[in-house]
Length: 195
Image (cartoon, rainbow, N blue to C red):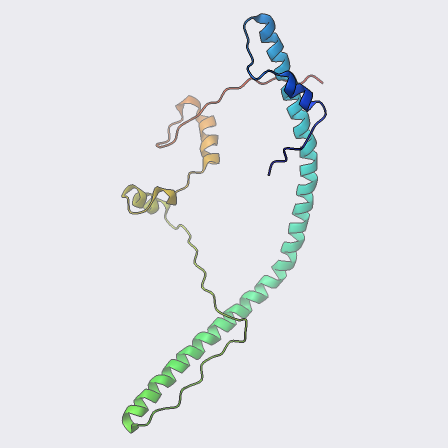
C-alpha cells in the first residue's frame, strides 16, 4: 500500500528542482547530473535507513507475537488432531455397522416379506459438519515437467524459482544458460555517500 501523502524533509524541493527531461551536453552538465544523482541516492538511503529501523521494530514485534501464538497453538494442535482422528474413526465404524445392519435387514425382509424399521443414522450436533479439503503435493517434478511438455497440463503448473535462477545467473555470469530462462542485466549508476 502506497501513501502518496508521506513526506520527507527536503524531498519536495529536491524533486521539483530536477527538470522532467535531464539534458547532459557537456562536462559541467554531466558533473551537475552526477551531483544530483549523489544527492538523490543519499536521500534514498537516508529514507530507507529510517524506515528500516521502524520495520525492524515492527518485525521483531510481529515475530514475538507469532512465536507466542505458535507456542499456544502447538499445545492445542495435537489434542485437536487426536479428537479429529477419534471422531472420524467412530463415524466410519458407525457407518460400516449401519451398512451391515441395513444389508441384514434387507435380507430378512426378503425372507419374511416384512419391511424393516429404518435404522438410526448418526446425527451430528448443530453446527458440526464434515469438510473434505483438497490439496496437492508434487512427488515427481520431472513427471510433471514431462506432462507440461506433452501438453497434457498447462505450463502454469510449473513455477520458476526466480530467486534461485537469479543466484545462478550471478554465479555463472555471461555463461548462464538455462533453457527457457533469459539472463537480464540492468545497469545503473551508483554513488557512495561520504560521511
